[in-house]
Image 1 (spheres, rainbow, N blue to C red):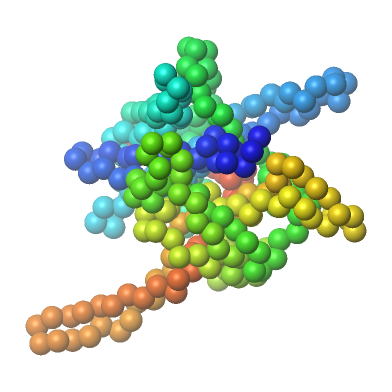
Image 2 (image 1 turned 45 degrees about the horizontal axis):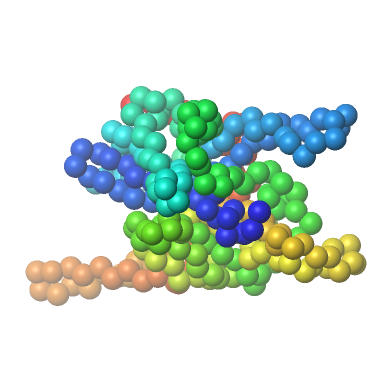
Length: 283
């Protein structure tokens, strides 16, 4: 599958509704695969589950500094109708959403997963023509890739910043950048690394991947991959912000905040960890 088609299949636009408040964000799909039967000569592997991945602050928006469970949560699949690409929205009620949502045991970790596999299967069984539905897997995780990752490597970030994207083709916005902190180290003690990439506001929940490589040196040999090989690095969740000392002007206090023009990315290894060991939350 071409890399462009993979981005079609793995990314999605998210909406949360809290009363009259509507918030949009980005997300992507991750497939948990079963074991391949070595006795069978087949490329087919059972998908044990499909999870929608996004930031905790996208899934559980904060209003007046309080985390709120949305009244409804909507994600989108792509369908083909009369040769046109259209969104197929799937909306979860609050109760169903809580039943499917998992968070990390450390509430600081800004990553959640939502169990959506059965909902996608329902659409396929109903005869809906889904467009190249795909998802990342454990094969795309850094520890299972033969591609090395280092500071300065090229990366791509794909998402729907504040609902801005190619509406006609339903294709996400893709921005480029580089790994800007030491790879494999927890930046400031958190399972986060930094990227040097000036992103649009509202890009939270976007998937971060290495730029596809078509030629690479692996085990001392020059290797070629016609579809391009890439690694799932993590989940983007905004920029570190520096808050300057307040400026007092007569009866007014001005607090200026500066961006370092780098982005926080939570490591991709958190996703299978949350799937296996994550917690549910209650109202």
